[in-house]
Image (cartoon, rainbow over all chains, first blue to last red; front, side, top):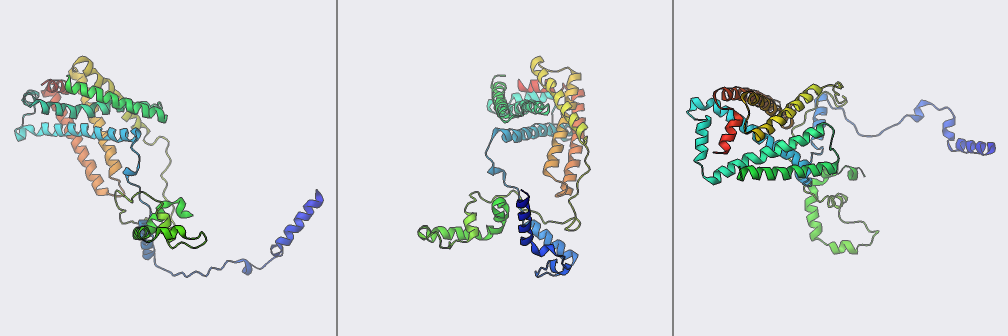
Length: 178
Length: 189
């Protein structure tokens, strides 16, 4: 055992014989023969900014496979914007109505809608019902996630399709039967 | 090797030249390539052979804007102060508003419409919920470092809009029948 170690040490000393002796610093110092030039601060910044232009850009959304997880998430935001946008537009129009001579009181609006053809009524109902039910049901999913529940991928997929199913059924019911 | 691990680098590098060469390589002689002995060097440049591996189109939403460098090249990235409760109360407030909307949304379906007080609460929560929603959209799509002016304009437009909506809903609640009753009547019109 001891003889083996002594033999190994001897081998190592032979292999690295150059480093066992003390050397002057000048022999170890690296020398690099690269062509360099001094530039001022502004030029340096410019070179760096131009290098940054060549960095990769985030890929387009279209490269991702359509899946219920991220589709439902996008739809949640889009439906929210539609519903709230409608509310904001109505609010602004309601305040501007006396000045502009519009009639946005409930009785006159009801009378106006009553005079619409059936097709227009059904379209308007569908336009409100689908976003409303989707945003409401999907909001419940989001609230359960915020409690830390139902975060497994399979569960998210299942609840996503459940939300879509519930939306379609209730929106169709309220569009055509109520 | 680096180009295999980071294909983005490669695409930037060979995008300009890859397309015409790939086109030529299809037209030139694929047979010659196949009959070529394994030890003979390929006539197709290395970058083109790797580029052919990337099948998707180069497809970007927005081109990169002119870049500007804050400080010098050797400055570290600024790290924000770590704060465990930053945004935490804000987050809880948003959830409470959303959760509060749930019974107020279900109730009209069960009862037909709401009494004035509950209707007013629903309106108030809708205003807050909408404001928060639009605010997060603005924060997501108008980043401060990219479009600072547009971000400010959008934020102020939203604040004015929310205030207008608040006044409008107050007026609607006090002078008219309330939103749940209005929607019910419109739905059955």
